Structure formats: C-alpha cells, structure tokens
Image 1: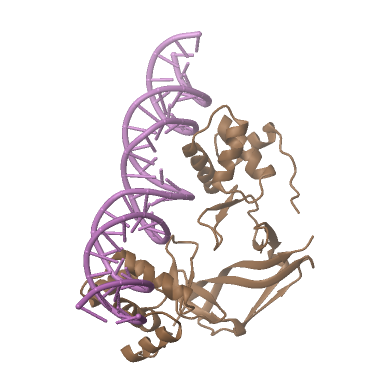
Image 2: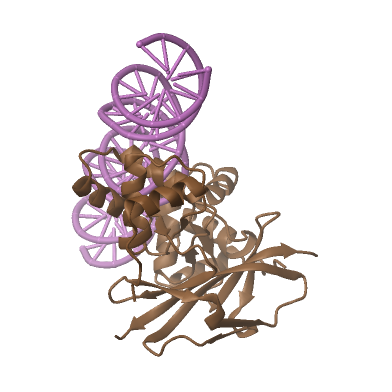
Length: 139
Length: 139
DNA sequence: AAATTATTTAGAATGACTCTAAAAAGAGAT
DNA sequence: ATCTCTTTTTAGAGTCATTCTAAATAATTT
C-alpha cells in the first residue's frame, strides 16, 4: 500500500528550495521522513523518528517544520474523529481516506475512484468534500 | 432550515427517563436547548445559554451533562476541520453535513439524499462514511 | 569578518476538555 | 418527616496537543 520512492538529501534539498523553503538540516531530515518513509504520521511520530535520526531536535522545531511544510504546500493536514492529533499527509492531491477500524491504519482513496451523487436542495453549492470511509481492510 | 419542535419540560423529562437518565434541573434545561433551540452548538455555546437561563451552572456540569446525553444516545458529537471544539448534534439519524464556508453555518444532509459510488479495491470493506460538504449556501 | 536575517530552542502559555474530591440534591426505607 | 445511600453538581486542579516568547544559534548578505 505504502509505495513511496526514497528521496536523496539532494532531491529533498531541491524540493524545499523549489517550494521557497530554506533547506536546513532539521527540515531536510524531517522531509526525508514525512515525504517518504512516514505514513500519515502525527507530530508525535515525527518527533520520535527525529530524535532517533538527529543529534538533537526540539519539539518546537518539529512543529515549526511541519507547519512550514504545510504552508509551502508540501504537506496537508487533517484530523480523524477518534484522535486529537493532527495527521500529516504528503499526498497533496485530491483524495479521501479509508480508516481500517481494526488496526487504525489509514489508506488513501483517490478522488477519481469515488463518485458522489447528491439529491440535495439546489441552495447547496458544493465546492469540496471531505470523506472518511471506515471499515475493514482485508489484505 | 432549523425546524425543531418546542419541547415542554414534561416531555423533556419523559425523554430523559426513557433514556435512563435522571432528569435533574440542569439536564432538563440543557436538553431544552440542545434538543430544540440549539443548532449544532459547541459546549461553549451551551454554557453561554445555560448561564443566561439558569440560576447558576458550572462548566463541569455542562460537559458532564453533554457527555451523559451522548452516552444515552440523545446526542451525537463530531468535529469539523476548522475548529478544535466538539459539536453536539441532536440529529442521531444517519446523515452528513454541509458547511457554508462564508458563514460557518452547518446544515444536515440526509443520508438518503447522497449516494456514493466507489471503484476502490475490493480489500476495502466500508462500514460507514463521514462526509462534510463544503461550499456556499444561497438562501 | 561584520551585520542582517532566518531558524532553532527551552520553557511558558493556551484552550478545550477531564479529573478529583467535597458539597448538595434526590431516592428509598422506615 | 428523618435517616441512609446513591447520584449530581461544583470549583479548581490537571491533561494534552499545540502555539507562543524571547534568547541563542546558524545562515546569508554585505
């Protein structure tokens, strides 16, 4: 399911610069995780990973960096009903989510694979939708 | 849009008893608001209303009462992406929501008025969906 | 290398909500 | 009504994810 290419330091650096973000040590490291390895991580998971993979990093930097990446359009955020924690998503295309209720795992569902028909009063002009499918994933 | 019947004290009391909840003064009052007058209120809005309509009420009682009503099945809760606050919904039937992005107003969308077609891999067994439509409501 | 600007950091602050333990209110039996 | 026993209510402390603050550090420009 998770199918992300490894990104070299150079490539991450380039990505950051293209997005107008100064590629600092901390940002490059966090990007390597959230843009590749990480699968819908929370700030807590990013912090745990960063503490293992960097000499030293502060909680605040993790949040600062994630917010910077969101502002730069490299990440998106959302929350699920069952948790207070923000989830960071490197898939910035139009898509929805499937939550496996047994494991808590999240899967991306492409917008093109879902069609929604609405017979609602014409006063409602819909610009966008957020959909969370919940159920069981059987591999 | 808001189309709720007035509920007398007696009726509220009966509703609470049927749900197995002791009808105290505070609970009856809060029910009158959340089951009738209130439109997708937050705890903050319930507190504000309660402070005007009761001699005295504590923040904790508002939360206790709302949680009791949720446990009793008289209310549902959810959150919207743009706010940290829990929203209390007296519509406990299967339904979705429409958020008017200009005003922040919420409208119920009946599940029967929406049909969702999914062409997703068969490993996904969907049990339920949460949908938030966002756009403009033009009355 | 000095000056200017941007980033990182520790720790305090925030905000919505929950917990704690004591006071008050109800319910039931006598 | 009165005495238990249980349930609610309450004020205030606590929690948890996240943001803010202001000082230290690093990077970039001059």
